[in-house]
Amino acid sequence: MKITANMYTLDMNLNGFPIYPVLLWSEQDGATLIDTGMVGSFAELQEAVAATGTCWTQIRRVILTHQDIDHIGNLPEVVASLNGKVEIWAHEGDSPVIEGKQPLLKMSQERLQQMPEASRAAFLKLFEELKQLQVSRLLKDGELLPLGGGLEVIHTPGHTPGHLSFYAHEAKLIIAADALRVEGGQLVGPNEPFTPDMPLSLKSLNKLVGRGAEQVLCYHGGLYQGDPDTAINKISK
Ligand SMILES: [Zn+2]
Image (cartoon, rainbow, N blue to C red):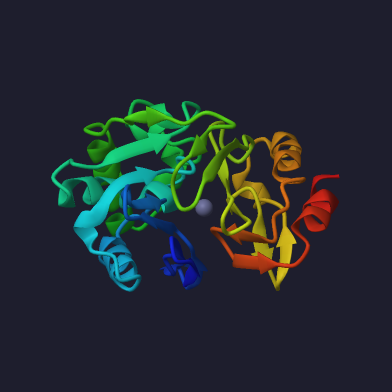
């Protein structure tokens, strides 16, 4: 889905539910992916990028909003397909996991054991492949990136320690990642069972308001167009 001439959502699928990685484009800086989708959906990611009219080899960097498996799932394939000529940007709170130095926060041995064999094999392969990767740039809260018409980094810990949201100035849009969701057209808080520090995640939401946002893009649930500040204030208090 086209948001602006420089910003598209990559409409993908996770167990029957839509998820929304983002593609940013600029003449000068090439293409940037924000998140990569669930493990095992690399072909779907490539199709979603092609649907925006972007050539795959124009991807220069991948920003990870956080370490969860449905966000980093295709990262090794993305890097391999571009012969390693792609930067990986993330927050230092999650970068050791993205580099395979620490286990995923929400992937216990118990959860792995309960999985069907094929999924477990795919997950274990991913964990091995992550060890080959290096985060090339650590993003800091408040940084303004010259991507997609101006992209401000907002550190929103709680769902994970290094969880990032962004404010896209041109689109007047908050890229909330998993800090917020859309359910039945309404903006709601993060998914509690998968949010280890719920009080912190609600506190982080205060950093998203007061920016003049007119829309919010949630990785789970998609686009919310209404009065973001009022809706977010209701959730955070
Ligand atoms: Zn997620």
